[in-house]
Amino acid sequence: MHELSLMEALRDQALAAARAEGARRIALIRLRVGELAGVEVEALRFAFPLVMAGTLAAGAELHIEIEPAECHCAVCEVPFPAPDGCCDCPHCGTISRRLLRGRDLRLLSLEVE
Image 1 (tube, rainbow, N blue to C red):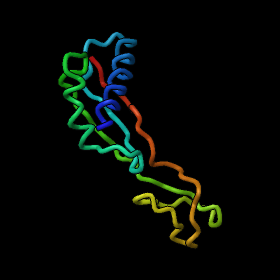
Image 2 (cartoon, rainbow, N blue to C red):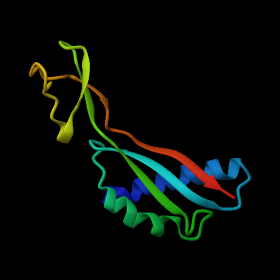
Image 3 (spheres, one colour):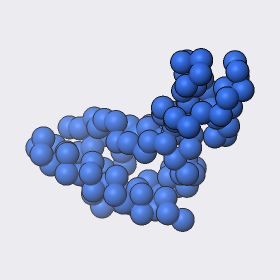
């Protein structure tokens, strides 16, 4: 379950940012997880309270935004959705080699007190 170590890394990043702002508590953490990030969102949710316990983020809310995967067709010069990593252009059938988004795991923002 690599989601536990991912959540630990996100915790460390969030705590460092909160301390830099002089925060006493983190009330909300927002993450962006790409469809193709290889991360099990429910496992992240499960790990969250365990990893945040005893820190400034204990009891914080977790909001996760799912980033849809999107490729770019070099022939049509248009972006297109790439559900499940399928990178065949729906317009011309060309297989795209350029993934525009969908692999991120990013701390978007914190709400602190």
